[in-house]
Amino acid sequence: MMNRPIIALDFPSKVEVFEFLNQFPAEEKLFVKVGMELFYKEGPSIVSELTELGHDVFLDLKLHDIPNTVKSAMKNIASLGVAITNVHAAGGREMMTAALEGLKEGTQTGKDVPKLIAVTQLTSTSEEQMQSDQLIKVSLEESVAHYAKMTELSGLDGVVCSALEVSAIREKTSENFICLTPGIRPSNSEKGDQKRVMTPSEAKAIGSSYIVVGRPITQSETPYESYVQIKNEWNGEK
Ligand SMILES: O=C(O)c1cc(=O)[nH]c(=O)n1[C@@H]1O[C@H](COP(=O)(O)O)[C@@H](O)[C@H]1O
Image 1 (spheres, helix red, strand yellow):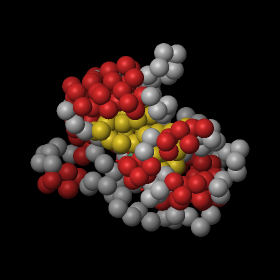
Image 2 (spheres, protein in one colour; image 1 turned 30 degrees about the vertical axis):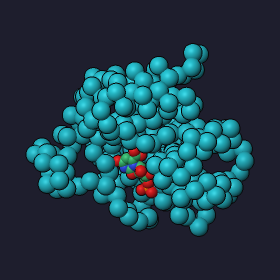
Image 3 (tube, helix red, strand yellow; image 1 turned 60 degrees about the horizontal axis):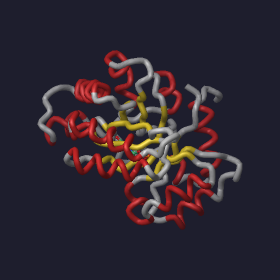
């Protein structure tokens, strides 16, 4: 699938975001991710500021609460005009179904319902940590594939997982199911806190639908060059 890498805008405030984006050509329309750090500082207006510039936004707030609360929160998120948003699959099927209902109810007539995806096991979690911290006794791959199946049965569009689990998920879910994969590291870059990583070309080969890349672009001395390199590798044009 040909598409843009999603850039994780993990910055403390919009000042740093726009300093960063100013290093890109104005005509380059990006797919960006607004996460908790930025959203909790700037609030919903950061989303409209980005969409007004022509960028697509993945709002990554990873909701995980009782079904009623998540449904109401999703109604509000739907009004922001984001392309993708997410919940934690660990919240369960009832919560995921409620999230989807809220999102549909909150979407204006005639507008697209944002894609809803569920986080399976965070890419910063190792199998050992999952087994000891969450008392899950199966393999990490099995846990992720199980969450993916539950997510599909709840009617959502896909999951967030590491590229390492995409093949296992593809065996259990339908063709169009989204596997959005963070934990992407070009071969020369630092892993940081990520445990389950792959390069952009490996992620493409394994069948990821979207890749999310943060620090390899945001912390680069030359962010636009790093972005183009990653985009080309992801689209198979080395
Ligand atoms: O939901 C996410 O986007 C997410 C899920 C996950 O399992 N792992 C993960 O890294 N992320 C996000 O993806 C981004 C990865 O950033 P870098 O590690 O800097 O490339 C961060 O903004 C994380 O919040």
